[in-house]
Length: 425
Image (tube, rainbow, N blue to C red; front, top):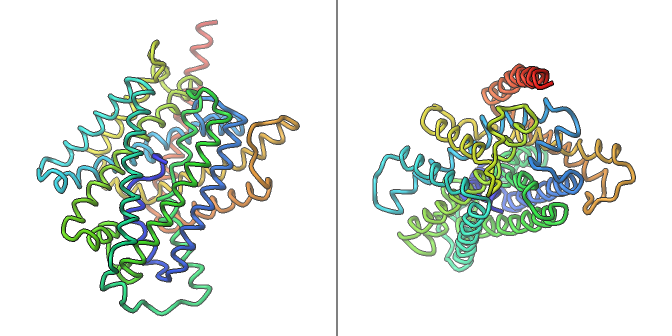
């Protein structure tokens, strides 16, 4: 849940309303996003049961297809999706810092301090990082529940009674709902990061599938309720004309202090998301280094805590560099979904590969109604990726540019590994 709930749910209901603007269709889109996430959780849960190795997604793609595919995943994880998401979360917190404290410190310094602090805490051990993540998760869910309760109690705003645009034709509505799925799935994405920790779980074949399914189910319930109260208090018209729907709901219930309370909620949410990314993602880079497909020193783990300290530090350093030096990096977040869902489709394809390869093997969890649900998720994931690419040609160019650069980098590591093996022999 900590990997899913970030700042997206506090902003994206208005994004969806601007595209769809029909109350039933808005709720339908969020239900559809939840159903897609459950299908994805089924896929990851079976992969975790079949291949409970450290590295999660990376290990699944490596074993099902080719190490190059897995390397591309880890490469884009480090240079775009995860590090960029961490930098954006830290800067989001810095943006709300003045409303929380009344201070006007440099946002870049605040973001640096947050990234450095969370990186250090997670370097101390998985228990320390996990405890911090759990604290933020409890606070975040509690704050969201309070927001939902306030939304059901508050009087509807004047905008709730305003007239909305005429309903579009059925075909146009379906097209609008499809276009809005990018924003919806951005808010839902993150459940796959639970698989990164599989190598450090005591019983991953059982606990990881349970955690995935219960966690995604809990997020779906919270997201639907948030959208219901936004529509109840603001109406479609009010939801369409605000960039901070959660703040407006809180304002309707609490008056002028609503904005400050909402700032605290969003800050908790971004910090919890940031903690999750620092805790989970470096396990992928550690697995890459173990395979000889990254710098060997990244594979070093602390002898007592067994934490990949160097990989965690690398993730933090890259996120800090992006925070300070990557101009216009916020644009990357628009096509992170395209990268993620391209690999989600490959993960679904991996189920078919492993089932054919492991024919007759019993596992603790299997995708219900396979192959139909697995194929459905694979097609939906490809459709969302293509939709994301069509919405931003700049994002498409940068994404496939990263893929192109990954190929020679991968083969340089392969060549170095062969040379090192030859010297040892």
